[in-house]
Image 1: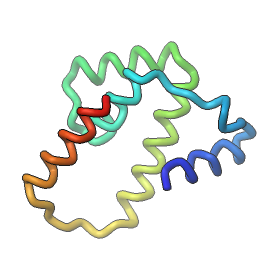
Image 2 (image 1 turned 60 degrees about the vertical axis):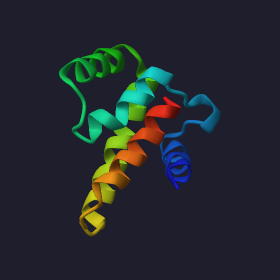
Image 3 (image 1 turned 90 degrees about the horizontal axis):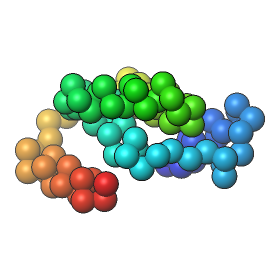
Image 4 (image 1 turned 60 degrees about the horizontal axis):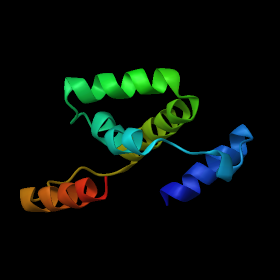
Length: 95
């Protein structure tokens, strides 16, 4: 779903999908920062990186916009703590 949204955004702003890339380190920290779960060091790293890296800056703004849309459209429900930890573990394993 996210790839579809990115492709649509790329078409809207006139960029080809194959031109869009983002540094792996930035991607691993991006969602942590946008979810408000990052340390000050992670936030500083991301800010310094996107100040220097135009593709990552664009990616950050797209992800931020998508998260805002989703946040306002979805119903908030409590999630079991063990499910949250399991998902975080899987995400961190891939970074």
